[in-house]
Length: 117
Image 1: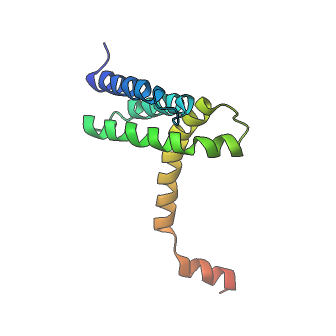
Image 2 (image 1 turned 135 degrees about the vertical axis):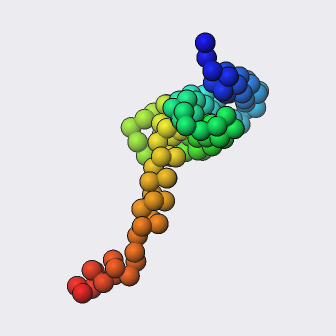
């Protein structure tokens, strides 16, 4: 039996996709791919509470949907659904890694090395 968070997330995603299909300016393929990728992300985060998992689902879906055009334009991926899926799975973890590197980065030390000190 599926856990309640997974069922609620699936119902929310299905409702959102159904509503989006009625709006002509929404790319349903990209939204579906981003929702599936976000569902995978939320499903894999077992250490979070329910509301945090739903937040991760929504955030990953939005990131995947909004990154779809860039992924399709800059990579060999040609379908919007696959681009949304990849965007939802890849963008958030890469952003978190980048934030960690920026927090550890010391500009003064880097500049001293560039000058040869």
